[in-house]
Every structure is written in C-alpha cells, then in structure tokens.
Image 1 (cartoon, rainbow, N blue to C red):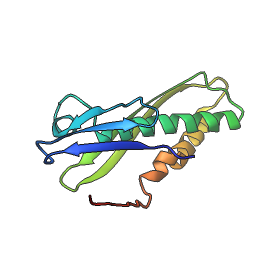
Image 2 (cartoon, helix red, strand yellow):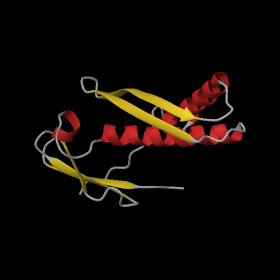
Image 3 (cartoon, helix red, strand yellow):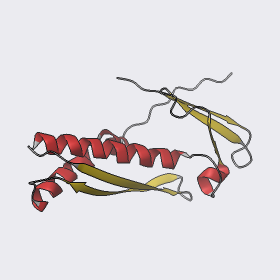
Image 4 (cartoon, rainbow, N blue to C red):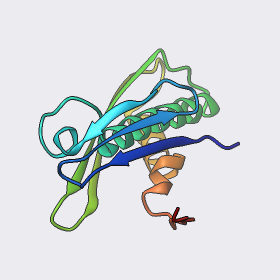
Length: 138
C-alpha cells in the first residue's frame, strides 16, 4: 500500500509560502508558511501533521492490540504533541497521551498493550527510519 502527498513552496524560507495536498484531498492546497510553523499564523505545518499521524496510528494500533488480546475498546482518545527543536533542526520529542474505556481489562494488561502500540505503530517506527530522497532540478 502506498499513499502520497505533495508540497509546493514559493519564495524564501521566512517570507515564502506553500501549499500541501494529500491523495485523499482531505488537505487540498492547504496553506503553510513560516508563520504557521514557528509562530501563530494561519495554516498547517509539518509538526502538526506528524502529531496527527502519530496520534491516529498509535490509537489504531492500540485498538488492534486490545482486540487481539480479547478486549473490545469502547473508546480511545489520544493526543500527541510533537516538539521541533528549531536550533538543532530536528524533531526532539513526540508525546502521546491516551485515555481509553476498555471493559474487563486490568491496568497491567492495558499498560502492556499501550507499550506495544507505542513501540510498534508504523509512525513510531518512522521517527527512527532511514529517509530516502529522489531530487530533480528543473
């Protein structure tokens, strides 16, 4: 399975602006700029999108884990905060916070499934993955 997104940027890093689109068109020429990334400007930014992806992926993995362990989750709410260390130019932290309603599960069993989801959801693995890039200059 493959999914794609595109980005376009025009201008300098600070004064320029860009648009991001996704294959599903949930994001369709959605604006992003220096202001939406490093200040409180209108638009999205890569860290916000990573946080959404990590929260969604982790939550789905946790649901699969719980179901496989014989439990039916009634509700799972997850928030994620991604920290960009601008000085180092790297994502330094992704913090997941989860609350779930899972009838019949013990705290120990729940914590075990959470730990596995944290370590093994595909987005968690991506944060330490090799990055490949193909570049073309027009």
